[in-house]
Length: 431
Image 1 (cartoon, rainbow, N blue to C red):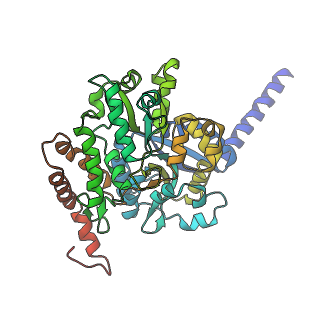
Image 2: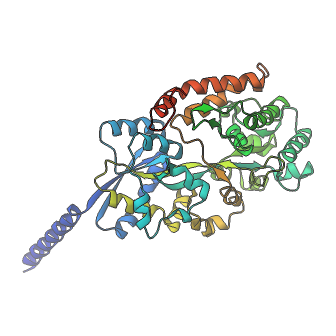
Image 3: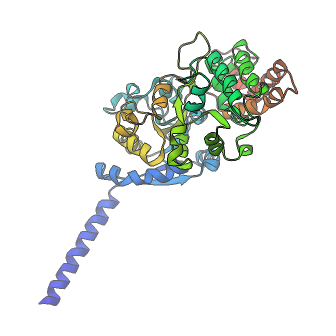
């Protein structure tokens, strides 16, 4: 009898396993490519998604950032794209322009949970191309000022400066308090974000003529570059790339660096790299603005969006993944897992963010951000701009000469874009 009971139990278990297997086979498999650490961490959210969407099996493939761009392009050419992917916001114009992405306007109009109103305006605009929506912002990357409140207070600034003139004054006064090898601010010369942000703050479009020419010689960017280059020439910032600096956090704790224009990942890095006793040594503030401009100064809108590929056979199910990852509660949990700032406004009401005084500057800053130029070549242009400014920083070349050279180089980079636009219906040729 016992043996019969065991056989019956085994048979019941087999039937249950077969039923579960049949249920799994009935599910739609959706493939998501996630980049870098985000691609690793998002796997932790898959069980919750599948509980809420039992008809969908979500498979996440992690792709290193260093190879992601080429791999995505290769997959598009080979008609082997995933259903959806994480895309850096500056990549969206390129992939939308070649026809790789599905426009989302129609599905957005029917969605009960995702709309542009739920996101920061400047962040949402990064997902637009030619007037259509091609992605939904997932997380935000922008820049604020990390600073030493004690050093600024000793220099006569109880709060972080809000204007460029106040900022420059604070740098000069902090310099007097530091040892000869100290610098009031860190602006790594291999990072394009800082000069680009200063250009945006002065109203520069960065690119002109529908994104077909450089605008770096224009009066707006020239004024920004004068400020940026002047900081180095006065000895207020070290002329080093980030990799040449050594341990920036240690130098900050020692007071050899008093300010640093940097991004949200450093909230976690400062907490990990400085001791408990040193946590009072740092604070964050929104960026200063040019004199006469509203505070805070504009920062750039970076980060990643989630996009659906046009070749997907499961667009409806892929959209369910986007809706799930856009939920404020899920975005808040993703922040806890990664430190990536939520793109959803409502997610900032979560206590982990609302109760963090050092994250507050980012919440203020994301209300004042601007998208980078929407051309596929932007990252190449931006990196070249940063590298090409170094001769002016070192005094080996005049700033007007440098900016003119950047515009010439950018003109060559954008030659194909001018050619393509000249052949659009209604466009003038010979640009």
